[in-house]
Image (cartoon, rainbow, N blue to C red; front, side, top):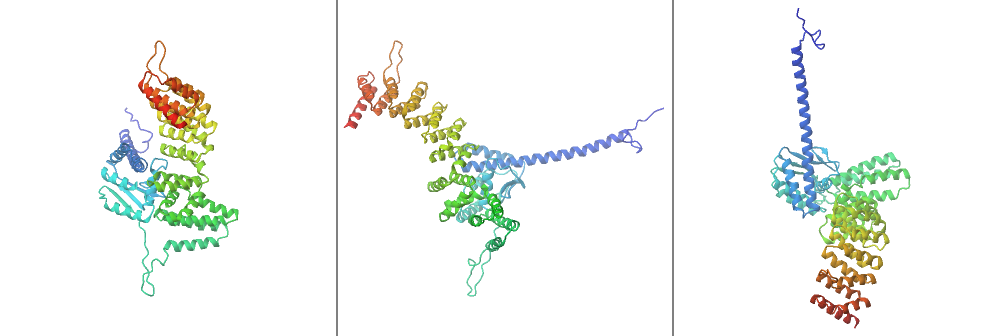
Length: 530
């Protein structure tokens, strides 16, 4: 008797083993297809973020590293490569860069800059088609790298944008409603006499704000005012944003009720983000008549205001505009604390700029933070830090310079030599004397010899005498004639009795170059004495 085995799943249903296997195969097939679709969607999302990240970096390089052509080419190739498989829409979501309506991480390089440029140029969306042309991508990135802080700049941007033949890259500008001109009784257009809708709305909102007496009502009105300010920033009406911010600060300063003051403080903190402060800070260069107003707003925002000024300084191309931002920065009370925080920025050029500013401010409170950056991997940062520490005359900065003078980069050692030579003193002479014994770079050797001459201490002169003397001994090796001549010149700069005596002893040296250097040095010494 044959017994047919029935699966527990099929008991009572009349379904056999083969039928059950077929159902399972169909069921798992649906699952696999759903899994495949989800994986494809996840891959598409990752590729979209990758494309946007590379495009944002390309714009950032054009803004901050205009000379790094090779890096720009790499970023452009990356954008073009990823665009072979998909199209991407870049937009703004609450002032932040969004890719296909998904907000990107703001810490990625160039993401904030790209979002700000889109806000300033009133761009609502950038669409990059599949198989986008590199020439169009580069043209748009170059256009976005140009700042726009005034109405004329915005009009110029719109004109240049219209000249781009976007076949695979499309830009959509935000629509700005312009009120129709109103005719007066005399039949004359009076559009300028009638306030814009936002102006009417603001007037009404500030009137309601004045009438509000409790924190709940005040907060509700402030939320509406905040929305108007956000809209002004998105549409590029930065002057309006600055006026709203100033009015809020004026009202906050007149409030004595701590509960209402707290509500105002929350709203002010809401607008201390870079997406609002950087365009406002840009008005310093484009609207000098607003300088006091803008500076007051930036002062009120503390370290965030300092960050905005430094960013505008770095991005400015005109020397006069950079000088203006520098003067404002040095008047800000939170400048030192904010610059010390910038020393931890992952971008090397920001760290270098912060170090240079701290050196100009001669901020002794920042010496420890500056000394920590002597371990920075970028030689340009270490060089700027050494130059900043040279502006201080404290004992700690001298100890820090003793580390810089043995740095692996000759450029950093040169900065340290110049700082020690200007410092003078016994400790500086000792550090220079020790450094020349282990120095192999001739340029640094020449600098150390000159530094010893400017220090002019007895130990420094003794070291110069040994450097200027000819080699001696049974197994003597010929010394570098150029370095000996440099030591002779340094002895002349020292102008001590011991240095002059050493010069006279070298007048009959076998090397003609050394004798000529001694003759010039003695003549210069007699002329100075006369």
